[in-house]
Length: 284
Image (cartoon, rainbow, N blue to C red):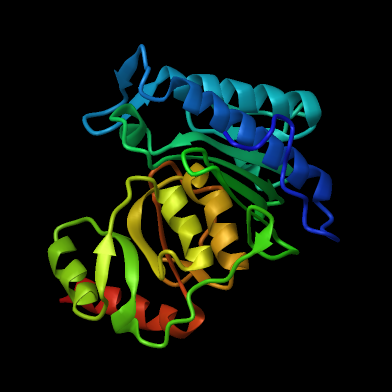
């Protein structure tokens, strides 16, 4: 990392979560530095499923993050990708929808990471009473840190950012992943209206890219978990994008199980059109 040890981007002035934001920024940088220390030098890769892997870096990063949160905020619950639910000291379950819950993805884009592809990130979110309130995502290969709170703007390395303002849908470059029997038809329906789709292999980073227009939109029909979207969805939303579930409803629900979430994020002027295209194709 090029940022000196202990250096963090300043919290956005006026946010009621300034302390938590500063903590999250520093913690994400520490986890990102850990990942880079082991990048292309992994000693162990295990298979979680036929298409998913986990490395020692996932576990080390998660341990670092979870232990730091427990030490700083022992009254908060944690939901982490590799170790699951960590109840608060008071006993509140992370998925209860009550109180404060930190949502942690210690390494989003593990397959990329394990293969030496430099597209991955650390994602840390804070959800309060079931509503995303803070999100931090660090891309350690580019030394970039996206962040947002529910009462402030989306930022990249401390500077405010905005979602795409392109007038024409035909100019859009989007992150898109559709699945199911009609996936080809649905994808074709969208591709006809945009410039081109791309797939990065890190949903959290791709969704965060909507906040500053690197991707004009993000569409993924399922396969996502709370730790993929809690931070990135808030960042995209605070950047000015409209974020929704694939049925147009609320995009975040702690009660949803792993790999059961689908999201569409786009500038408000084009969100409805993209949602309509996907729905049209699904009924075709």
